[in-house]
Image (cartoon, rainbow, N blue to C red):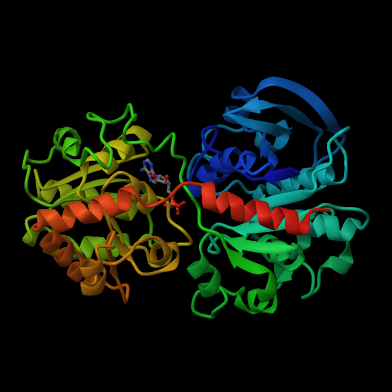
Length: 478
Ligand code: ADP
């Protein structure tokens, strides 16, 4: 069957977070399930530069204030449609943020145009192409089911996936006409959302199915505590809401053949990780200590990720004799605080502020434990990479972290099934306790190695998730 995937980013063409990983990896896994995916992306310079065999397949005379066309081709290992609309997307750098750090003021129009183009593809604007289902990712694509609804007529089935409910796409009500929506759409039962227009709200309202990226997060977002204003509607639509865990790309994340590593290894050769540990210590200016627990953080540096909790817990981490390797970028305050912490603990805390794919791989291949103290986490990918690379995840018990890590409780240790350490409630004190627990487990090499092996043999691939998505698409195919 044919599925159109619509998103604002896809690895390796353009990435700001886990969304890009999912959009880039899922099509390959779905192919094995007999589902053929084409991905619609905005024509940012980097996407256009990565597009091969481009061929114009449709033209829009006026899309959000200018002419646009759809190009079909291959790029980044994907079958692509690219929305070539220079007035919206011919801008350098980050897809959402202008140089200077604020969102592009016309983001509402830019991503409405993406959704509009996706809806038009669903209605047959590309000769010879009719997807049976459309998969719209996050708020940037979430107006798509609303366009199909208000247009009326034949349409494919629709799935909206919420990768992070914190980003909802709320825009001024005055834009209604400019977005090409009828006056009648502005009701509680339409696209209206707290006196504005809600893109994700519209998607959740009109999609045939709503998924999010873990079963626990799917349950959490239906509660007032984690629902961020949308829990009422999500409860209302509970019968079509489900959680499907993300996987990771086993070719990109393969410790036996990873060129970013100093030493290749697998579950049968865990000792070889020592070479990566030593390389990591050199790279991050950490003391060459082969025995201490080496903790790591690979993360956006934001409140969601619990960076302030980790900053509070640093003295405890040092007290148990730990080292810390930090790779991250985000809020300036957290970036500065991490640099300061590293300067105050030379040889014990190493910090690289910035985005570095290869370093992320070396960290996963060389650290002992990965810290993920997120306040909420829809799925989380870094703990999946950690499991696969024999880095023991130490995680907050929330969302996908709760679903993918088996806590080293006395029971799980006795049964030999533990893969990591979880903590709750999500406070600095409980993170400190988790760090102490991890350090104690690390002092028992047999127990630690068992946890590593359990993690490395856990299936974190896309196989099972792809089967679930394929079943969902078949359910709603039109
Ligand atoms: P989120 O999408 O909320 O940022 P995820 O855990 O779902 O978090 O995905 C984050 C992805 O980005 C992972 O693939 C992780 O390895 C990667 N990543 C995050 N920060 C960095 C960084 N500074 N350098 C390299 N990779 C990073």
